[in-house]
Length: 321
Image (cartoon, rainbow, N blue to C red):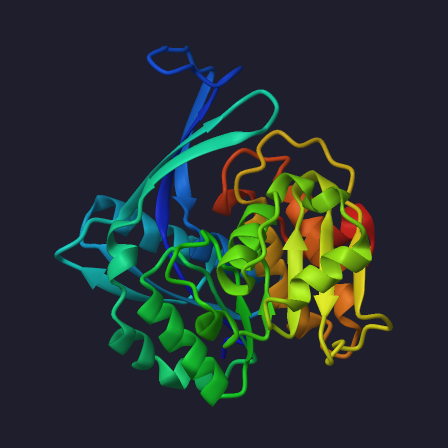
C-alpha cells in the first residue's frame, strides 16, 4: 500500500545540450540530445519512490506512442500508476534547451494533463485511504488539483502543493487547502502579489533577511511555506505549527555539487520532501528539508528529469544520514 500519492503531470521531455542559448532567428549546433520521461508530477513521484517510500502516481496520458513510453518507464521503476488514458488528447511533450551553465529554457504542451478528470481522481478514493501524504502541482487542470486536495483532507493526509507553474487560477482558497507549499522564487513572488497584493522582485528574495522573508511568507496564509532558492538553497517559514522544529523560520544553504542540468531540481526537492515526511515522521521537519535539499542538489549532476532523480542510498552515501 502506497504512503504517498502524487497527482500530477506526465510530459515526454526532449532535451538539447548547447553552449549558449540561441538569439531570435539564430540556429546553433547542439552537442547532445536525449529524450525521456518528465512532467512535474511524474518527476516528483519518481523522486519520492526512489527514496524507498511506497508511492502511487495518478495522471493522464494519450492513447499514443508517448503514452506507451510513460507506462513502460513506470513499470521499469516499479511505480504503481493510475493512468487516465485519453483518446481525445495526446501525451504531453516538451522541448528543453540546456546551456553550458546548466540553465534551461523550456516550451511544453501539457495536452492530456489539462484534461485529467476530477471524477477519475475521486475514483481513486481507496488509494488515498491508505496513504499519509498527497503531493500536487499545477500542470494539470486546477479542478483535478482541487479534487486531490479534497481527498487528502477527507482522509487526513498531509497535503503538499508545489504551485508550479504559478498559473492565474491558483487563488487563496486553493492554496490554503494545502498544509505545505513549495514555490520557487518566481512562483512565490507571483503568488504573493496575487494573494496578498504585495509586489516584490523574485530576483531579490535570496538576498532579503530571514525575518523579512518569514513575514512575507506568512501573508500566503499557509501553515508551512518552503521557498526553493535554487543555487541559494531554501527557506522555511512555519505558522503556529512548527512541525517539530525549534524555530518558526530558517534558511538552509545549498549542497556543493557539480551541476550540469538544473531541470527538475525543484521536482526532486518536492518529491524527496514528501518521502521524508514518511521516512522521518518522528523527526523535526528540518530533517526532511535537509534530505530534500540534498536530493535536489544531486539531481543536477545528471542530464534529464525523472531519470536524474537520486535514490535514497545514494543521497545518504554522499552526504550522510
